[in-house]
Length: 247
Image 1 (tube, rainbow, N blue to C red):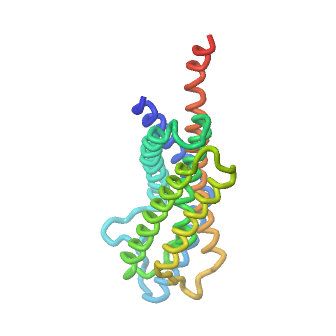
Image 2 (image 1 turned 180 degrees about the vertical axis):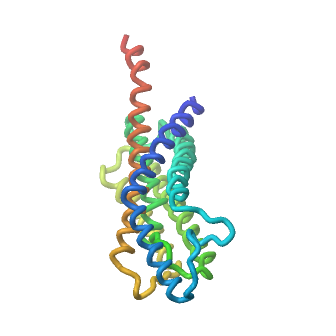
Image 3 (image 1 turned 90 degrees about the vertical axis):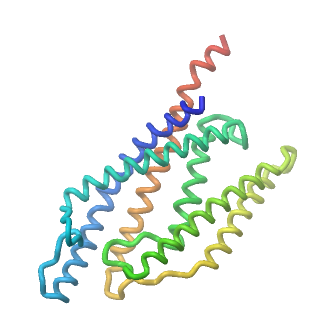
Protein backbone atom coordinates (compact mmCIF):
# COMPACT_ATOMS: atom_id res chain seq x y z
CA UNK A 1 0.00 0.00 0.00
CA UNK A 2 2.76 2.45 0.93
CA UNK A 3 4.64 1.76 -2.29
CA UNK A 4 1.44 2.42 -4.25
CA UNK A 5 1.06 5.81 -2.58
CA UNK A 6 4.71 6.67 -3.21
CA UNK A 7 4.51 5.55 -6.85
CA UNK A 8 1.42 7.71 -7.28
CA UNK A 9 3.38 10.65 -5.92
CA UNK A 10 6.25 10.00 -8.33
CA UNK A 11 3.95 9.94 -11.36
CA UNK A 12 1.88 12.97 -10.35
CA UNK A 13 5.03 14.82 -9.25
CA UNK A 14 6.70 14.27 -12.62
CA UNK A 15 3.64 15.63 -14.41
CA UNK A 16 3.49 18.58 -12.02
CA UNK A 17 7.17 19.29 -12.62
CA UNK A 18 6.76 19.33 -16.39
CA UNK A 19 3.73 21.63 -16.17
CA UNK A 20 5.67 23.91 -13.83
CA UNK A 21 8.51 23.88 -16.37
CA UNK A 22 6.07 24.91 -19.09
CA UNK A 23 4.89 27.81 -16.93
CA UNK A 24 8.49 28.84 -16.24
CA UNK A 25 9.33 28.62 -19.94
CA UNK A 26 6.42 30.81 -21.02
CA UNK A 27 6.34 33.29 -18.14
CA UNK A 28 9.78 33.23 -16.54
CA UNK A 29 12.18 32.53 -19.41
CA UNK A 30 11.70 35.94 -21.11
CA UNK A 31 12.60 37.65 -17.79
CA UNK A 32 15.71 35.50 -17.48
CA UNK A 33 16.74 36.48 -21.01
CA UNK A 34 16.17 40.17 -20.24
CA UNK A 35 18.34 39.91 -17.13
CA UNK A 36 21.10 38.08 -19.06
CA UNK A 37 21.03 40.76 -21.74
CA UNK A 38 21.46 43.45 -19.07
CA UNK A 39 24.34 41.56 -17.45
CA UNK A 40 26.14 40.91 -20.73
CA UNK A 41 25.70 44.49 -21.86
CA UNK A 42 27.14 45.77 -18.59
CA UNK A 43 30.06 43.31 -18.73
CA UNK A 44 30.87 44.14 -22.34
CA UNK A 45 30.77 47.86 -21.61
CA UNK A 46 33.04 47.50 -18.58
CA UNK A 47 35.65 45.19 -20.07
CA UNK A 48 35.42 46.02 -23.79
CA UNK A 49 35.94 42.32 -24.59
CA UNK A 50 33.51 39.73 -25.99
CA UNK A 51 31.20 38.26 -23.38
CA UNK A 52 31.16 34.47 -23.09
CA UNK A 53 27.60 33.16 -23.37
CA UNK A 54 26.06 31.56 -20.29
CA UNK A 55 28.91 32.92 -18.11
CA UNK A 56 30.90 29.66 -18.41
CA UNK A 57 34.50 29.93 -19.53
CA UNK A 58 35.36 26.26 -20.14
CA UNK A 59 32.04 24.82 -21.27
CA UNK A 60 29.75 27.06 -23.30
CA UNK A 61 26.07 26.26 -22.78
CA UNK A 62 23.71 27.70 -25.35
CA UNK A 63 20.40 29.26 -24.40
CA UNK A 64 18.57 26.42 -26.19
CA UNK A 65 20.39 23.89 -24.02
CA UNK A 66 19.54 25.91 -20.94
CA UNK A 67 15.86 25.96 -21.93
CA UNK A 68 15.88 22.17 -22.37
CA UNK A 69 17.62 21.89 -19.01
CA UNK A 70 14.76 23.89 -17.48
CA UNK A 71 12.26 21.13 -18.30
CA UNK A 72 14.71 18.44 -17.20
CA UNK A 73 15.31 20.21 -13.88
CA UNK A 74 11.64 20.86 -13.11
CA UNK A 75 10.71 17.32 -14.13
CA UNK A 76 13.32 15.78 -11.84
CA UNK A 77 12.40 18.22 -9.07
CA UNK A 78 8.73 17.28 -9.39
CA UNK A 79 9.65 13.59 -9.35
CA UNK A 80 11.62 13.98 -6.12
CA UNK A 81 9.01 16.18 -4.46
CA UNK A 82 6.25 13.78 -5.51
CA UNK A 83 8.05 10.84 -3.94
CA UNK A 84 8.46 12.68 -0.64
CA UNK A 85 4.84 13.81 -0.88
CA UNK A 86 3.73 10.20 -1.25
CA UNK A 87 5.67 9.19 1.86
CA UNK A 88 4.18 12.04 3.90
CA UNK A 89 0.71 11.23 2.60
CA UNK A 90 1.08 7.62 3.65
CA UNK A 91 2.31 8.71 7.09
CA UNK A 92 -0.54 11.15 7.68
CA UNK A 93 -3.33 9.08 6.21
CA UNK A 94 -5.97 8.44 8.85
CA UNK A 95 -4.74 11.25 11.08
CA UNK A 96 -5.85 14.86 11.36
CA UNK A 97 -9.18 16.32 10.28
CA UNK A 98 -9.18 15.40 6.59
CA UNK A 99 -12.19 13.19 5.87
CA UNK A 100 -11.08 11.94 2.45
CA UNK A 101 -7.82 11.26 0.64
CA UNK A 102 -8.56 14.18 -1.68
CA UNK A 103 -8.86 16.59 1.27
CA UNK A 104 -5.65 15.26 2.81
CA UNK A 105 -3.71 15.63 -0.45
CA UNK A 106 -4.87 19.21 -1.04
CA UNK A 107 -4.27 20.26 2.57
CA UNK A 108 -0.85 18.63 2.66
CA UNK A 109 0.20 20.33 -0.59
CA UNK A 110 -1.05 23.68 0.69
CA UNK A 111 0.80 23.32 3.99
CA UNK A 112 4.04 22.32 2.28
CA UNK A 113 3.78 25.18 -0.21
CA UNK A 114 3.30 27.62 2.67
CA UNK A 115 6.19 26.28 4.73
CA UNK A 116 8.71 25.38 2.01
CA UNK A 117 8.02 28.01 -0.63
CA UNK A 118 6.03 31.03 0.51
CA UNK A 119 7.76 31.69 3.84
CA UNK A 120 11.32 31.54 2.39
CA UNK A 121 10.15 33.65 -0.55
CA UNK A 122 8.95 36.42 1.75
CA UNK A 123 12.40 36.76 3.35
CA UNK A 124 14.72 35.74 0.53
CA UNK A 125 12.90 36.03 -2.83
CA UNK A 126 14.52 34.71 -5.97
CA UNK A 127 16.64 37.08 -8.03
CA UNK A 128 17.43 36.97 -11.76
CA UNK A 129 20.95 36.72 -13.20
CA UNK A 130 23.20 39.73 -12.59
CA UNK A 131 21.68 40.32 -9.16
CA UNK A 132 23.62 39.34 -6.05
CA UNK A 133 27.26 39.37 -4.97
CA UNK A 134 29.04 36.12 -5.95
CA UNK A 135 31.20 36.40 -2.84
CA UNK A 136 28.15 36.09 -0.55
CA UNK A 137 26.37 33.22 -2.30
CA UNK A 138 27.47 30.77 0.38
CA UNK A 139 26.06 32.90 3.18
CA UNK A 140 22.83 33.59 1.29
CA UNK A 141 22.34 29.89 0.62
CA UNK A 142 22.91 29.07 4.29
CA UNK A 143 20.38 31.69 5.41
CA UNK A 144 17.81 30.32 2.98
CA UNK A 145 18.31 26.73 4.11
CA UNK A 146 18.04 27.71 7.78
CA UNK A 147 14.76 29.47 7.08
CA UNK A 148 13.52 26.55 4.97
CA UNK A 149 14.23 23.96 7.67
CA UNK A 150 12.96 26.25 10.43
CA UNK A 151 9.71 26.88 8.58
CA UNK A 152 9.19 23.14 8.07
CA UNK A 153 9.76 22.52 11.78
CA UNK A 154 7.33 25.34 12.61
CA UNK A 155 4.69 23.66 10.43
CA UNK A 156 5.34 20.36 12.21
CA UNK A 157 4.96 22.09 15.59
CA UNK A 158 1.70 23.67 14.44
CA UNK A 159 0.41 20.26 13.32
CA UNK A 160 1.24 18.71 16.69
CA UNK A 161 -0.60 21.55 18.43
CA UNK A 162 -3.63 20.96 16.21
CA UNK A 163 -3.61 17.22 16.91
CA UNK A 164 -3.40 17.88 20.66
CA UNK A 165 -6.68 19.83 20.69
CA UNK A 166 -9.52 17.50 21.80
CA UNK A 167 -12.36 16.80 19.40
CA UNK A 168 -14.91 18.37 21.73
CA UNK A 169 -13.25 21.81 21.66
CA UNK A 170 -14.89 24.82 20.04
CA UNK A 171 -14.35 24.71 16.26
CA UNK A 172 -12.11 27.77 16.08
CA UNK A 173 -9.68 26.66 18.79
CA UNK A 174 -7.70 24.23 16.61
CA UNK A 175 -7.01 26.58 13.65
CA UNK A 176 -6.26 29.54 15.92
CA UNK A 177 -3.76 27.62 18.06
CA UNK A 178 -2.11 25.91 15.10
CA UNK A 179 -1.98 29.06 12.98
CA UNK A 180 -0.73 31.15 15.88
CA UNK A 181 2.03 28.65 16.64
CA UNK A 182 3.23 28.68 13.05
CA UNK A 183 3.09 32.47 12.66
CA UNK A 184 4.94 33.16 15.92
CA UNK A 185 7.71 30.65 15.27
CA UNK A 186 8.22 31.82 11.69
CA UNK A 187 8.17 35.49 12.70
CA UNK A 188 10.87 34.91 15.34
CA UNK A 189 13.00 33.01 12.83
CA UNK A 190 12.63 35.64 10.10
CA UNK A 191 13.52 38.45 12.49
CA UNK A 192 16.58 36.55 13.71
CA UNK A 193 17.99 35.94 10.25
CA UNK A 194 19.86 38.79 8.53
CA UNK A 195 18.37 40.64 5.60
CA UNK A 196 20.06 40.56 2.20
CA UNK A 197 20.09 43.71 0.06
CA UNK A 198 22.28 43.25 -3.01
CA UNK A 199 20.15 44.57 -5.86
CA UNK A 200 22.06 47.11 -7.99
CA UNK A 201 20.51 50.56 -7.85
CA UNK A 202 20.29 50.77 -11.65
CA UNK A 203 18.66 47.36 -12.17
CA UNK A 204 15.03 47.63 -13.42
CA UNK A 205 12.70 47.13 -10.46
CA UNK A 206 9.89 45.90 -12.68
CA UNK A 207 12.08 43.11 -14.07
CA UNK A 208 13.04 42.08 -10.54
CA UNK A 209 9.44 41.64 -9.45
CA UNK A 210 8.30 40.05 -12.69
CA UNK A 211 11.05 37.45 -12.30
CA UNK A 212 10.19 36.87 -8.64
CA UNK A 213 6.49 36.47 -9.34
CA UNK A 214 7.20 34.07 -12.20
CA UNK A 215 9.43 32.05 -9.87
CA UNK A 216 6.72 31.95 -7.21
CA UNK A 217 4.14 31.11 -9.87
CA UNK A 218 6.21 28.17 -11.07
CA UNK A 219 6.22 26.74 -7.56
CA UNK A 220 2.50 27.45 -7.18
CA UNK A 221 1.76 25.50 -10.37
CA UNK A 222 3.84 22.55 -9.20
CA UNK A 223 2.27 22.31 -5.74
CA UNK A 224 -1.26 22.94 -7.01
CA UNK A 225 -1.00 20.23 -9.66
CA UNK A 226 0.65 17.89 -7.16
CA UNK A 227 -1.99 18.36 -4.47
CA UNK A 228 -5.06 18.35 -6.72
CA UNK A 229 -3.68 15.69 -9.07
CA UNK A 230 -2.70 13.39 -6.21
CA UNK A 231 -6.09 13.93 -4.60
CA UNK A 232 -7.96 13.09 -7.82
CA UNK A 233 -5.80 10.00 -8.39
CA UNK A 234 -6.45 8.86 -4.81
CA UNK A 235 -10.17 9.46 -5.16
CA UNK A 236 -10.38 7.49 -8.40
CA UNK A 237 -8.31 4.65 -6.95
CA UNK A 238 -10.68 4.38 -3.99
CA UNK A 239 -13.88 4.16 -6.05
CA UNK A 240 -13.73 0.40 -6.83
CA UNK A 241 -13.14 -0.33 -3.14
CA UNK A 242 -16.03 1.89 -2.08
CA UNK A 243 -18.32 0.28 -4.66
CA UNK A 244 -17.32 -3.21 -3.43
CA UNK A 245 -18.08 -2.26 0.18
CA UNK A 246 -21.53 -0.95 -0.77
CA UNK A 247 -22.25 -4.11 -2.68
